[in-house]
Length: 319
Image 1 (cartoon, rainbow, N blue to C red):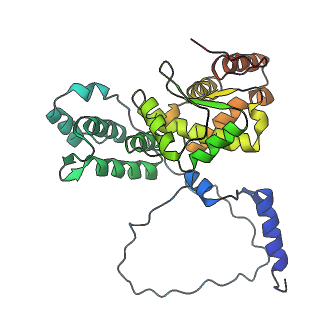
Image 2 (image 1 turned 90 degrees about the vertical axis):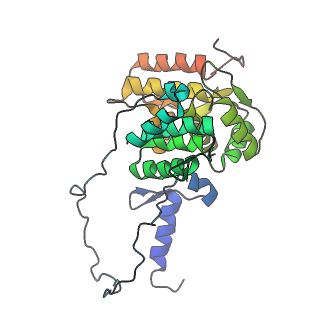
Image 3 (image 1 turned 30 degrees about the vertical axis):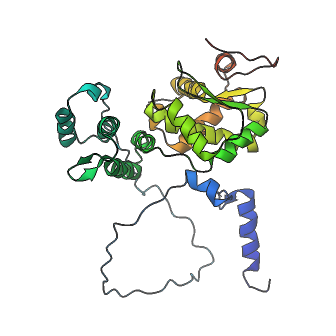
């Protein structure tokens, strides 16, 4: 308390508690819960050879106020784009055709599909030029992560059977609120989460129910499930009247929102995790922000049909 900067320390703690630090939004929580949405950069490209550099320590500025600097001259990160092609028909192609396409193709999305076909046919330990399919997928996963190419990140994550960290407590949080959760691809069998499950059980359900029909949605539905678990703990009013949260149809509602309100839309799989969370909040709070009454009614009808809104405690199923 005798520290000369004790007041500044208190001010910092107060700002962190309020959630804003110098107009920058911050969040405090347990590391195990925050790490699933964090961005980690591996600095393995740094040269480890020692160099003779004359370095000087940082010194505290003597100026009380140096003002704000403009950020308009800071270049924005380039968005990676490429033509996407469906290679599902290669599942019946001879092995040498698949290998030849891999050697001649530079598209990340095409490559992850082709490696997925090899994984299914030859196994994860099949070697190409002395490198296993698993290692090729991990390399693509890291490369796509650096480029923020989310479609490939999710595709590779699914093939590698990744599971969102700490998803089990959030599922339990939804169940505690009296809700049920279903996962599955639209038109296919759904699995209901109506009791707490271990991470291994959750992984088994997600990959047996979703991946055979849609590789990317295996990961995307985990993300939406995680966000629902977080939101229902902090904003339970968003889920008022919902008895069962059908994750597959939630994604369809987000697609409808994109078609109606977003310009220059791209595949939902290629939006960042932050954007997916923002779209989810928009869908759940449409009555608070939509100015046109017809949009509110359209979304309400959609949610009543597909995400099981009910005011009479009667489940409404779409056949």
